[in-house]
Image 1 (cartoon, each protein chain N blue to C red):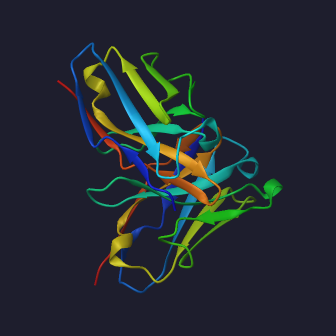
Image 2 (tube, each protein chain N blue to C red):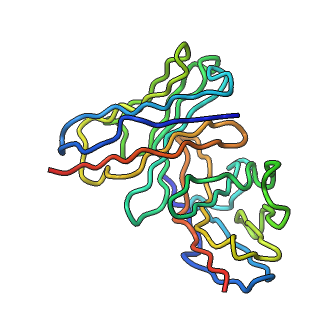
Length: 109
Length: 117
């Protein structure tokens, strides 16, 4: 199965902007991989932030946005808040199943 | 409100079997695919597999790490998805989550499976 890569860790200042990326070992990530972004906080279940590249649920804070950038899926956080400190995972779809990235630990400091 | 409750976790010896259940409410269960995802201690999320809705033939797909050992099934009359785990290994120790796999994923709270002698 494919390997999906994410930055292991990133730090952002409160109010700052951060972009997380999600790459695929098979080549460029496209909308056909239906990229998802989830966040995971200690002791909580994962929660969907973005689906199908850029779609948001009604609860997704407006400061989060998804896109395709330079052959990767991207999650941009604009105006970081302390509560955004979490692990972020992307998920890509392939013909033989789905694969999560290794996750990005985001620190707001 | 969509609710997913996993159950059936616990301590099991290597080589043994365990069946997890995911009981759903708040939506028409038969209309949705269901996925299983796990998180081993100190590790990231790992996709385990999914089962399509019966209107799509109830297709199943699995991660390479569990293919041939794990089986996902569903009982639409009871609104339950199952994860049958056979030939368990210590590396299967994880919190197992089920998720309603629509365009937007809804998640359960997870159940812990510990494989140890």
